[in-house]
Image (tube, rainbow, N blue to C red):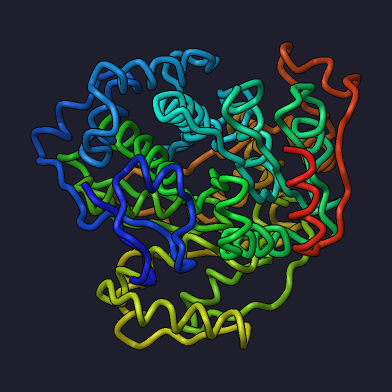
Length: 460
């Protein structure tokens, strides 16, 4: 399996090279040269298998000879041994034909752990074998940063710098990033919003001299391995609900488009997914794109669902590559228009294809709080605000297929919003009970590339 850039000008890489590289040298994102497919029999045989076994079967066609079967099975086993639920990502029924897939049983209580723990193990083995050291830089709207720090803390061959928007993440999210004591991890509070942080990361990758000098690597959703690892849980959920004999719909709270693009990957592999439904808050660029065909930035409004406070959804570029028949020049032109003009317009053909694959819904602040209250009363489940946005949108799209909403984070990561909705402040799990008592270690920086690059070079 080889990997190509969405902008068509970067070198073609192996899986290991694409994983360690992150962003392509032409500014694009790596995708498989072709989509491997699984037969109905292969998909049906996943039912009843462990999460680890399904992960092996789904990901193996993409990794080529990067790891032996024995190495890869060991990577998977180590990645998920610390999850608090034996099913890793269990399904919970909330209605006659609707379900929650709980993705928050990892060490930082968010769906990012499912992929990040796996990537940490893959990086460690690959770098040890190569005798190399890398500098990982990532931008986070809340959950990616803590998951990356947890996955890479204490590793000898990796320095990790995580950028988050100062004052725009929850206290739990911040403390998960600022309280680890290992010297190789660094939390950087950036003046600006998430899009500022994400653009700084992209600018660093596009500064090829700096990139090569520090051995830059990325593990947020620009990294193909992240998306691939997330595709696995679509298979475990769908086969548990009767796939491939039944078609299953999924609603995904998403800001950066990575988690729902993973569902698109699963569908391209042959999983019978009906609707892929984008659920978003008032920072609704993806919803507006589906409605009008205009992909236009409107500025970021801080919210009680901060992981969705995004206007530049990086992984949307991967979908554009398919919508435009894998023409890298066309994608590069759209990305240039977005950067220079703050918008681009989809062709009618691309818009029609987008609407064939995806639907969407938008939920405001008051509606989100009301949904948390309603779900607590009707089901007894206390949802984080992102998941509540998902269940609200899912209810608008219920049909005859089973509907699975991705429960992206534990309610305790957003205690203020949950308390406002229910009157009860959700407690952290016992292993995190002292989080508010731990010392914090953080550096605040301006949203300027030169200052950021200087800090990284001095502290790696």
